Length: 116
Length: 111
Image 1 (cartoon, rainbow over the protein chains, first blue to last red):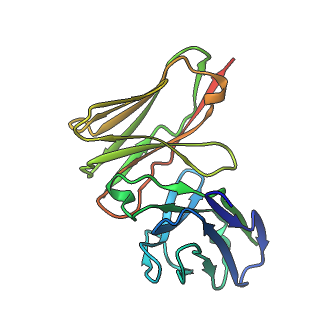
Image 2 (image 1 turned 90 degrees about the horizontal axis):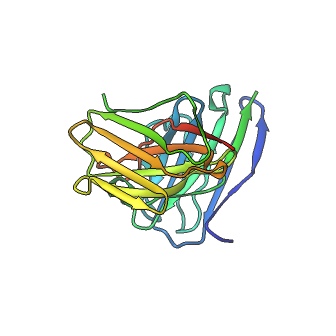
């Protein structure tokens, strides 16, 4: 593994179903993030984690939950998917959790989710 | 409210010309501003970071300027190549731990 991996690559999901998007990094970064990207809206932060054991809400957290049991993994769960959650989801990480203060973020390849 | 504006229309230029992309922001006072490149079907990749006191930053064929009075950053690619075709995202720092991104400008370099 090099960098950030996400799984699955893409998924079609029936509305009302539960889904977990997986994210793993091997860079030993402290901070991890989940964004969704929609046409014309850019990247919007869903949840973040500054370090293992802590999480926080971003700009659009409703309908999503996260956990950070260890440094490497940061899964995103949709408890009951709705069509408005159709999007491309990106996981990212940064070394110290100071991306808003000039620290670079590293992104995974994304998961394309279609909720019908 | 805080806002980041990038030209949503694609920028089409001829190979060899200089591409200039604009990022305007309102109700921010960023100390840093980052630029990322995103290719179709891929995640964004970091290109450059400029600090508020730097005015201009260069990396190979890339140049970024940062005008805190105009609340604007310009991103230049000189001697553009078809391989530079991508979407370019700006991300001014908001003082929070995560980045806030503009929606990006798509650049198409014609051979």
